[in-house]
Image (cartoon, rainbow, N blue to C red; front, side, top):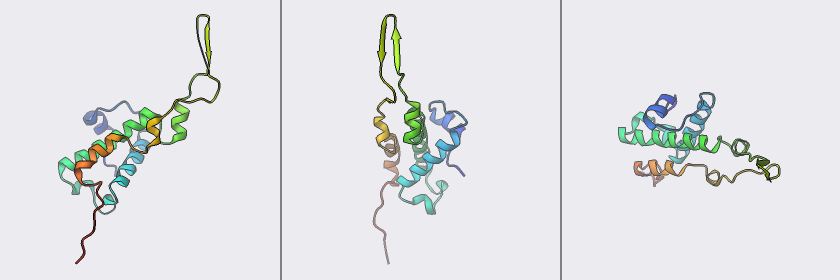
Length: 136
């Protein structure tokens, strides 16, 4: 079961509009990325095992990641580049600018897997800390 739904995203997080057809993919990939950052905590625990304030931070981290996917145009670099194609030419009056084919905008945030807000939401929770196990 997903940690958040589109209603939470829309009503509580107030994120940018996400089309319903891409919502399931964005939510699943964002949740997986947040779980990866949490160093396996969710392999043996559920969201409900956390304090309410921590649950809220995890949910907001997932929402931030979903919003980031929407802003970049997808969950993969190929989707992002396809959504950010520049026009090959622009004309205004007698002026024409040709950019050539295949150029894309730089996706500086795309060089990272995570929206920077994700770690800011998760940092106070302790879920980013791998720590040392106790034995004995």
